[in-house]
Length: 592
Image (cartoon, rainbow, N blue to C red; front, side, top):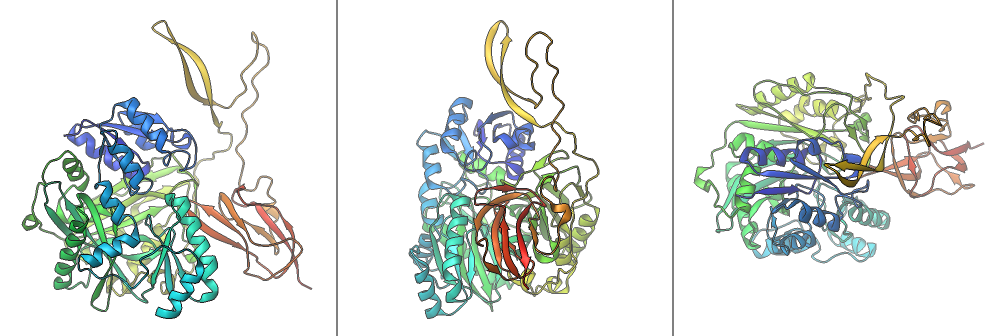
């Protein structure tokens, strides 16, 4: 068995891996950015090392910094979690080249399946058909136009590397192709470090059904049932369940066998997920995620198999502890993702901030996998997943009722969450009857009035920000230079001279922004984030609803639009600028 695992990730998944390691007696090493120095995964791990930086690129996507920590900590293995480097071949090879175990598939399998284009080719060679699409990377939006004119609109541009719906854009006509292509490339580059994209036919009313597979290094392949992940917004999942409802047994068997064929075709081992689109009794290969999925707990609850524990055993060179004939699925499990995000009537606006209260529900068949505790900060720089609520029931109606009870019991304050949207989904007759699709939340579900304004029960005003300062310290007579995070209060100079200044007040949402006087023509941003693109020009006419700028928060791009028609008289932001909730970005003089 492995001795010391470095978890190259953060949040909920880092906590999940740490707990599995603790149960096996395996030591854990956490890594963290400046913003995560007090995070839950850091507090739980046996050791923790700073990566520096704030953004993902500066920290969790900094290969050299992580390799340095591996060397300093003496870790013999690395678990990448999901996201970040989990499907990055270069990172996997950099790990294995140092004789360190990568807790995942071989780099060669990531090479084939991590790239959505080559994975389509591999699946076809294994006899598993995919949705019609290109098998080469796009070089221009004109190729999107050509594909759409040949196969019909709409089409979908997708990031070749990565997942979670990031880097995906649906294109309804040739006029949308260029902006969609540029936006997909930009989001893919920021999320996965690669901007290659491809295009495929966009199915009109599909369900997203994926198959959990796992294999060892001895040639044993097993599929452990399917998950239905059709309740999505912005191509990102909100609710997942297992088994898939209204799903014929013969399709389940065929899909499981197809998933194993795809995995075996690339010499895969460890845990992975083969994703399919299911429509009108047919299923199409979509992609393979060469990692653990966010929604893996629903499979664990119906199968009784601890997938992370099994990952660690496989990475240690052991055989799977079960065979295909041992798999017995019982009951029904449902997972909802609790994101720091306001449903806002269907707009789903990111809501970064400090969690002041977090009391997960309890009871029979109820599980909470979280990455935060009260007092922790949900940063704009990372994914907004706070945690996952999972329930098990003897059948689907029982599981739905148990989840609705649990969501009602859940108490979380300080940030807005997706819980009201989750309740709306689970309460709808379409969901109960399994009539929903991947487009149902955005095209059919009425979220009018569904809102989740953050409740704040304690004020953060007056809290002293912390800064990093280097100081000298002596330990057993030996002098060390160490870094401490201390309150940002100027240090007095000299012997008792110069009183320390008062703490700096935290900037409020409307501080200096004019948000308190917002009216028609005064355009503000609803959340903290970074302006990534400015579309409007001062002095030119603008129509109501036209995009003024694009705000990125929590890996999501949000269009900030004009509230009235008129002339843009003032523009207060530029690309790369950070903004806070309520900040004014533009002033419009009304027409006439």
